[in-house]
Length: 412
Image (cartoon, rainbow, N blue to C red; front, side, top):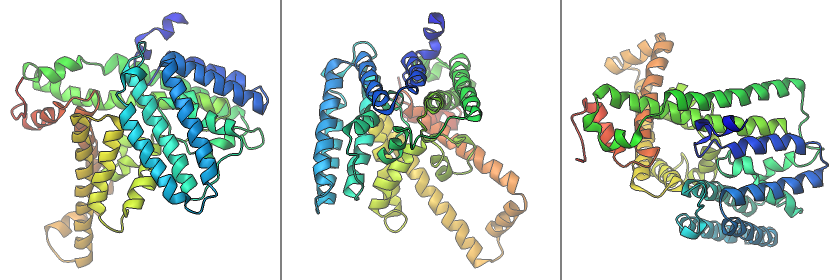
């Protein structure tokens, strides 16, 4: 067992042996009555967060969450709650960027990535509660339910990003969905598949990424191309494995979490990709950023850019993530222009090359769908080059791959 848990499979920041051990503990907690189960779940979650980070980090989160809960509890009956909650949300965002690189919050055991993941996902949970109260939703009268939601360890460092009113239904026996033999089997298989995904990512899609990005001119062109595929596929295997493990083990224990990935690399355009990749994150961005900015009604192109730049800044404030945010924001703008163009071709219904291509694609829907899916995958895969690991050189790598290793922005 120790050899299994100390294997390279669990070296990744998103797939940890602590997550596996806590998931097993969740199964035992299912046998306890509601109050004892929730209290034990909170205490064990806090203990594991403290072990993974630091006492100051954990105490700070508890203090901020407690102050926020009682502040929102008072505000939920205030007629100007929407304004006050908006100000609180802005304060939370400011605090996030302040604490993101605070040295005293870093963990000497796991490094700053665990620290950053914890702050990032906690920000979205606290923001969703704050904005929902501003929209008129009520907080649970029992603060224990709120704290279990905020510090639920399987989702604390990596998501999915649950909403409080959804998560609360798992905290009492009356509203918790019953566990059937069919669900036990399907979730057990899901856990095994999660471990297989993590193993495949380590076994087949690992490269010396520092050498790949720092000295690409010394590598064959096919190695550069393989690195793009390895980065895209390996990244998906790891994040989906971590989420499958979280969702599967939590479901066995009676905590039904939202799905987060729905075969995103098999979608035929960028919009469908983002409806299938990190779905709880994109739902948050849609409900709390995109729609309030105007959604599809006004300033659509600007809204796309703002949404993806904010998602990029939520990950890490660096040049590499700005590049990635612009890549996807501009990609969504181009997609909208593309769809509008073909809509005009349909409306005019005149002869021409564009109309002929449109009629051909309708006559060959599978071929057209396959072509658009392949193009979308490669667009996303190129975009991962500056993202994963935060390499701004990834933009130059995109140019190298597109040009056969001739074009570049940087010289090392």
